Structure formats: C-alpha cells, structure tokens
Image (cartoon, rainbow, N blue to C red):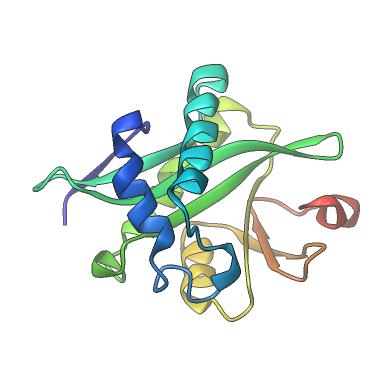
Length: 169
C-alpha cells in the first residue's frame, strides 16, 4: 500500500475520533481509548498546537489510493522534569496492520526528530503484552531502555538515565 503523511487538519476530527475510539486499536491499553468526541478534539488540538508552535508533532497517515486517514504517527516534543524528549507514536486502523506502515512512519519520524533536535532522545513506550508495538520499535532502530514509572516498556534511540525513566509520565 502506498501512503503519505501530513500534518493534521481540523477536518480530520471524525476519522481521528474513529481511530482512537476503536476497541481493536486499544486492545493492549483499553482504559486510554477515547470514548467521547470532545476527547478526540482535545487531542487533535494538542497536535495542531505542536505543528503551529514547534513545527513538529504527529502526522496523519493517509492511504494514497483513497485519500482516507489510516492512522496517526510521528514524534511529539514532550518534557520529563527538565529533560525534553520526543515521544514516538504509531497507531493505525486494523485493516492496514502487518504491512510495514508503522515501521516506515516510525523511521521517518525518528529521522525528522534527529534533524530537528538531535539532543532530544526519541522514546516509545508500550505495555509488555504489546508484541507488535515492540517489534515496530525494534524494526525502527530503537533499543530497549528499561521501564517507565508505570511499568511500561521503554525503547529509545539511545541509552537513557534511570532518573529520566522514572520521570516519564
């Protein structure tokens, strides 16, 4: 499948909500699934703000043949204590899983992060039972860096100080 990425638009709200409210997409983290459209609006607004104020945030992943949104991915600037980092994110509709799209998006996002702020570590976090997400992180070139304060697995583009791991929300 051919796909492209672009910054989000206000008009993406419905597809954004559909992706983040789909229980299949949140199988490994069901309590964080969006259940109301206003929650999707808030998340989308944070991404729009990231693009407007930092020039970087998560992308909308689009199927080139249909122009339909098939996911969200990229890096978003965050901070843990006084340490800035990029959070790597990839979430796709189930119909396009296992096609290498998440890995391709992750690699592109990591490259952009290194170009934008090379001193910021790139971090991906997931629950230990999310084997597909772990495989994507490894395929994108990240290494296992430990566990965060909530016990999630942490992968990064470099070794991380234990104090940073403890501060990750």
